[in-house]
Amino acid sequence: MRIAGKKIKPATIAVYLTVIVVTVIMLLPFAWMLSASLKLDRDVFAFPIEWIPAQPRWQNYVDIWTKIPLALFIYNTSKLTIIVTLLQLLTSSFAAYAFAKLHFPYKNTLFLGYIATIAMPWQVYMVPQFLLMREFGLNNTHLALICLQAFTAFGVFLMRQFYMSIPTELCEAARIDGMNEYQIWAKIMLPLSKPALSTLTIFTFVTTWNDFLGPMIYLTKTELKTIQIGLRMFISQYSAEYGLIMAASVVALIPVLVVFLALQRFFVEGVASSGLKG
Amino acid sequence: MTLANPALSDNRTDAKTRRKVRVVTRRRRRIENALIAYSFIAPNFLGFAVFTLGPILFAFALAFMHWDGSNPIEFAGLDNFWRLFEDRAFIDAFWNTIVYTAVSVPLTLACALGLAILLNQKIFGRDFFRTAMFFPYVASLVAVAVVWNMVFNPEMGPVNMLLYTIGIPPEDLPGWAADRHWAMVTVILFGIWKSMGYYMVIYLAGLQGINSELYEAAGLDGANAWQKFIHVTLPQLAPTTFFVTVMLTIQSFKVFDQVYMITQGGPGTSTLVLVYHIYNEAFISWDLGYSSMIALVLFLLVLVVTVVQFRRQRED
Image (cartoon, rainbow over all chains, first blue to last red; front, side, top):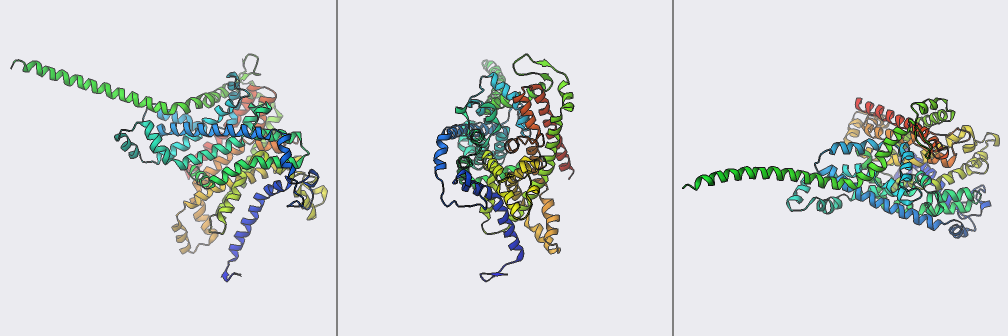
């Protein structure tokens, strides 16, 4: 076959066709969601689907803010996500520096403690963890979720793997120049580890933002809820108001979409590198 | 000079003290270095030890106790363990988890690998396609699950409407999440759709690590595309496949969120999975000891699969 004077192999056409079909399957639910969010409830299930509503109902996007405290949920989630991500980056890269570049007694034993729990599903120890938090009086606080998500074995492992690839001579040269370990970490290691830091940022951001079971167990007060459980509550309360549910879902997706598109390049590289090293 | 002698002895003691001082300073420096290292680790390790390691040890102990969270803890011996065999819901949850894993792991893996191979070629708009495939993975689960429920709604959803339009009679239309036989299929389809983009990216990295000379050599030997795939791509990707299999298996064993949102474990117990049962026993029935015993089963499943995979990896 010839297109624009170029010869095109049938195999190439097959590749494009498959890729396009799969992409459509992947994105269709989002398109449907967006389209339904601009419809009246009774039009949502009209068939054949009217993809672009003739009279878009923007009112749905106004109503959701008054029907549920969506702004409060987004605030709560943003607060949790930002604190968890910052703590995770700071403490993980700090600990990882010692594991990668310093010598001290029980280094391997301590690191083994981290490694051993990487494959351990959180669900195995979520119950005792909840009891512990309750003992500390942290039930129904955001602090509980911060403590639960900020200190992960995964973060330390990811950062350590990256620091191992930075030449040790660099640290030694800095020591001769009179830097102490904290300065080496802050002025040499941190600036060099941007790829690993962005990977960890994205992973932590997405996990915390989208976490469901954690907030569901810990937060029962409406004013503390995150967007995920808030949205879920809304869905069960107004189960027939499809247009509103879809509008709220679109709003809940936007922050992740923005972060994802902004850091997309790092994301793909990061997943790839952490995958291969893990 | 008579003073020479004391001076000499002075020198000798000097050397001794200096050596002693050196040993002391070296020891002190070692302790100092260790303290510096510990100060790096402490902020993370304290949080990790208190909120992860502690609860893990507690979980194992709790599996052999009776506790409702408020009355005193009682030692239960193997009571909780024997109860597993009499608990219909546990047995269903166990098998459902196994079925979910056995079906979704190979399917997700195959889709991810296929997509990675397609999107590793130089095609127009490649970055867009990659991003599109990856997006469901980062998208909020609650939001996409509710769309999924509407799209697969048995009475009015577009999927069944489409099936009806192409000629499937209404009584043969799948009931999806509302039907005992289709509920698991619905949950599995959702899982594959949501996570395959992530594993595709890991496979893409693996593909990029393959030396292109291997393909050239295979080409010179007269290998066709299929033979190249079987004899070059697959063996070269073995470490990636190992990693993806382990990750996927662990993810499947601990599946919960999507089941909770799409089927609530039903109809009946047809999509009840282990983590759902742990959740019910702990936070609905407050039977903390028994729920920890189920958690222990989940842990052992993950452990067995990981060890078996590692063994196989080493043999290869």
